[in-house]
Figure 1: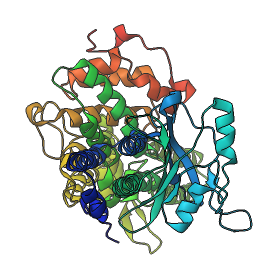
Figure 2: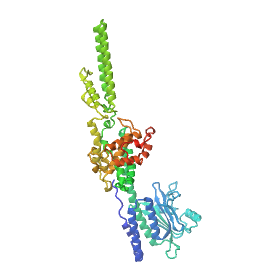
Figure 3: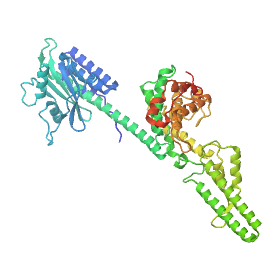
Figure 4: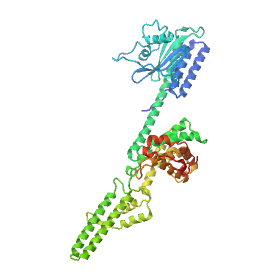
Length: 555
């Protein structure tokens, strides 16, 4: 479905062209100018309460009305009070007044489904016609009991009414303008609304309806766009029980740091559009992970693929143990009745079993990848791999094959270089995917920001190896947010760090020229992390932070 904004509203003024021609030239030019100014204001104003207030105020000015109410039609067929104004009483509710309207919305139909034709505003919606009432106190067609109660309470007298439907370009009524007490500009007496007033109010109402519809369409499309982005982020988070929540949390921390940087750094400022651009980039920063296999993202041990292959190796050790047992039994029979030969065979058996258990326990330990693997440990893996056993077919096979040796000798973490390349490729895919999208001008840098969160200040990051001069501030902000979330969250190869430990790690990253030093200092000095950790970290992770112990931090 393609949604097009409504057409400009100037043609609606033509509806009342004959009425304009009947006016004197000076008044006609003023009305046209006022309507044009309103059209410009409506096209620029993004704040809905202010927009609705502006519509009512301009309608009152054009018709010299003392009071008025603007209603909007709701999805459940009601008229919701949006703005109320009475100049002579200095009365203002709704809009930007800060005073909420306490009245319940007016139903267009009663509980039996019958149209509410007795209420003038509801009747205007149902009939689609303008209603001009010279004197509400002598009118019998409509129920003005609510109006009279208001008058009795305030001392006001609501006399003349002009109720106009707000029809958009599809001829759909989206609201009602109700103007009260037309005032003679010379005598200041209350008078009925004229035909000119009707024409002007209808033209303004139509113009306003189109502007409001355009804004509603844009708001709906924006909401849909944001929902789709968050849907993608949620889907990526759902792929892994370890990184679940990462794509939802990074935007929170990104914007907290961005707001602090905006206040602290002279060379970095955020307006509404650039703030929104960064937030969208943060939500999409890992969208490329839709192409990353789950078994690599979730690789909790060195031998894990779809399952942890350490259990296959356990099976081979069981075969070697059984082979040792058979050799021992055979040696005992051969040595009988020589007690010394039996003892020697038993000693060899126990040594063999002990060595097998030691080697098996060693492989289980290093399989977790929880600590840096020394060269001697890597060499031990290769020595173990030289042993052989027989499979179910009687074939002689190595205790560890070449792929298992490669994985078990990973020096740090659980990923091989090829697997890490697959993981890192998500940044490439993020850029590639986002560059395919036709972002509007104010979102054009989303691919650059989102794809740069793994770059480093020293130029050793990925995917492009950008230098500090090439790295935008937005990507630097996102990099710190991404790292801090990863440090304080569970991962397949590590437990979540405490707050103080995570900040120390970030400090070392600053000293290594990995992250932006100014942003790091702001992150610590302004305690940007505090709001985030209170919401997302477990209580046992939130420990005391001694800033003097954080490496590289400068007050």
